[in-house]
Amino acid sequence: MSGQNPASRRLILLLIVVTSFINPFLGAAINIALPAISEEFSMGAVGMSWVAMAFLLSSAVFLVPLGKLADIRGRKMVFLMGNIIIAITSLLCGLAFSGEMLIILRAMQGIGSAMVFGTGVAIITSVYPPQERGRAIGITVTSVYIGLSLAPFLGGILTQYLGWRSIFFITIPFELAVVWITWRHIHEEWADAAGERFDLPGSMVYILGMSAFMFGFSRLPEISGIILAGAGLIGLAGFTLMQMRVKYPVFNLSLFRSNKLFAFSNLAALINYATTFAITFLLSLYLQYLLGLSPRDAGMILITQPIIMAIVASVSGRLSDTYDPRILSSAGMGIIVGGLVMLTFLSPQTSFPYLVGNLAIVGFGFGMFSSPNTNAIMGSVEKKYLGIASATVGTMRLTGQMMSMGIATMILHLFIGNHPISASDSAGFLTSMRTTFVVFAVLCILGVFASLARGKRVTGSTGKDGDDPVRDYSVTS
Image (tube, rainbow, N blue to C red):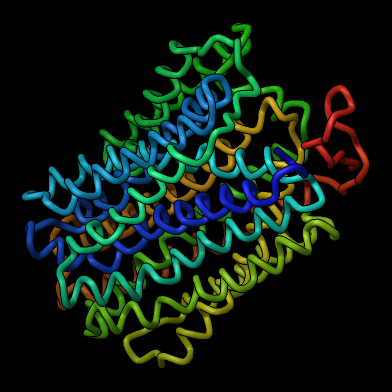
């Protein structure tokens, strides 16, 4: 389809833009509603965080297997099924009658999200030629940030006037429209690894290992968390050995061993998301519990960061078609470090302009980082690996987000325990929030070095068999 049917490309881009908006909206809008959900279901700080983390956990652990399955069976089919799952679980989340039920449904919703995110960028990369791919990816990433931008604002308004359940109900018509258009009007299928055998045993070991590690990480420093995280690491080590011995691995580890650009770009993405995602979670609690703002007013302040992200990501995506993504991404992470350091000075007396300015700095850095980094990753692999590359990008994002929430939750647990947050916890909460931002800043500094370590870009390499190359970057030290 690349270069032959611009109208079809635009329709595909539109569908992926819509889903790229809905998924982060569902993930982020819930943060502003957590105090209301906690009040209705009498949930403590840790239980409240799991409403957000269940979605991230299931998305992260299923992305790689589902990305490989999409390469074999077809990316359109997996994309379609993912949107159906999201529509159904959105309805059920809106009807949930307990905190436990909501957490379980959010985990199921995360599986649908994994199916969508594991295929979206891969489809874009399949249908757009290299000289236009950065622009298309930039538009897709921008739609993610628009979803993040509107999530606090719309989530706050919906929660305040219609209740937190309306956050889920509002997405259903859009999901149904995507399902219908995909089913009726998208006729091409993308299965560049068709004929390969799906590694079910390896997939199961990966899912169990990742689940144990990430769930255990969220429970640190408890003994159960240490045991689970350790068991998860052992499981992932076993998965690595299995993948070296099978003919058709679910995760081609050679992409990390032999492709420096792919490896370090993904590491940079993991660190970047691990140091930024929980900012909204913490500031939502800060604004509502410590400063006494309503969900609507808190959302209007938190909208700053993703709005700047959306604006900058679109521009940086286009720039990455011309300039080295390593420089753009590394500069973005350096800017994020500055914003995180400034956030460590927040107090009950902090002015709103100071907070908004910090959020703008972080948003600018994040937008500068994300689109070029994604473009570099997707441009570094052969076509048959696009699904797994897309899934790896998503896995780094979601694993990073999960780690971010895990770090924040662990530090909250250390300073205020697992009871509902109240005004009497203000000193402990402030200390935990500042500590978290310090940890994030240190990790982000390491991320700058990981981003620079990917090597310089050299254009002009060719794809396999000389066809329209997806791999248009080679690397020199």
